[in-house]
Amino acid sequence: MLMVSERTIKNLVEKADLPASVKEELYEKLVKYNEKYDLKKAEVEAIIEETVKEYQNALVEPGEAIGTVAAQSIGEPSTQMTLNTFHYAGVAEINVTLGLPRIIEIVDARKNPSTPIMTVYLDEKHRYDREKALEVARRIEGTTLENLAREETIDILNFEFIVEIDPERLEKAGLDMERVKRKLESSFKSAEFEVEGYTLIVRPKKVTKLSDLRKLAEKVKKHRLKGLSGVGKTIIRKEGDEYVIYTEGSNFKQVLKVPGVDPTRTRTNNIHEIAEVLGIEAARNAIIEEIVNTMREQGLEVDVRHIMLVADIMTLDGVILPIGRHGVVGEKASVLARAAFEITTQHLFEAAERGETDPLNGVVENVLIGQPVPVGTGIVKLAMNLPLRPKRE
Image 1: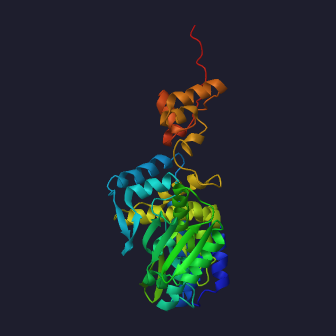
Image 2: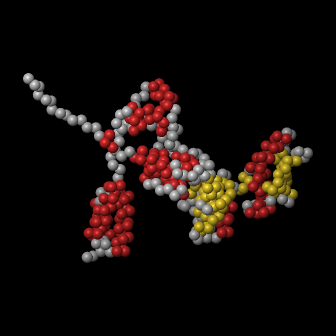
C-alpha cells in the first residue's frame, strides 16, 4: 500500500472530535512518524481513534470535586516537605527558598519573594566565552560604595567621611576612582568629593550637625554606582557548552534590556515581575513551573492538572490573587463559605448589614448546613411525577 499523504492525514485529523490545539499537535506528530515509518491509512485512523479515546478518558466527569481533589493532591505531599533554605541548583553562593516555605510564598502571591533570583541566559555572541559573559555580569551586578569599601571612618574633627577602597574589588567591578567620584558628584550636589589614591573623602557643604553627616555617609555608601537596582552579586556557571549568569536579587524589566542578554530564555522567580513585564498568561505558566519544580526538588510528583487548576484560579481575573481571605476565598460569592474560612463573625455581620443571600451552590456552605453536597450524584436533581392513586370507595 502507498504511504499516506499529508493532505489525507490533515483531513482525518480534522474529522476527529478533539480541541484545535490537540489536533494541531497530533497532526505534527503523525506527519513526523509518517516520514519515519511510512504509515498506512488504517494505521493513521487507529492512532487517531486511540487519541480520541485517551482524550475522552482524561476529561473531568460531570460533578467531579476537582477543587477538593487538587487541594488533597497538593496538600498531602506538602506535609512531607522540609522547611529549609537550600543552595540554588548547585550554586553554593546563592541561597534560595525551597520546600514548603516556597509553596506558601507562591500561593500567598507575595509581592517580594524572600530570595529573589534571576537565571540570565546570554545571546549567541556572549554565551560561549567566559570573558564576554563576565562583561554582561558586570553590567547587571549592582555595585555600591559599600561593596567596594575596605574601611569606612567618620572624621569628627574635620567633619569628613573617609572611605578606603579595595583596589581588587574596584577592578573586578570594572570601575576606577575617577568614575566613582564623577558618579557621586552627579548624584550628591550637597557634598564635595576628593580622591587621594584609593581613598575617597566626602565633605558636606552646609552640614553642621554630626547626625546630618552620618545620614549623608549612609546615603553615599548605599548609592548604586553601576548595575541594576535590586540586583546584588552575580555568579557565572557553565551549563553544557554555554555560560549562564545567576543573580541574587531580581530586576526582570531592566535585565531584558542589557546588551548581551537573551530575553527569550531569561527568567526570574518573582511572579509579580513576570506578570508586569510579560503578562498574566506568562505569570500563570510561572506559577505552574515554580510549584512543579519545588515539588520535584523534594522528590515528590503531583499531577500537573491540580497545579494548573490552582494557577488558573489565581490568575482568573487578570491579576495574581493569593489563595486566602485577601484573594480567592475572600471573593467567593457565598457568605457561609467566606465565614467558614477566617474571621467568621465579621463576614456574617457585614453580610447581615447588606442583606446578602446565599445561593448554597458550593461544597463548604452545604456541608455547614447539613445538605447534600452538589458533587457527584449530589449534583443530580430528580423529581418523579407519580400518577395519583384512585380513591378507595
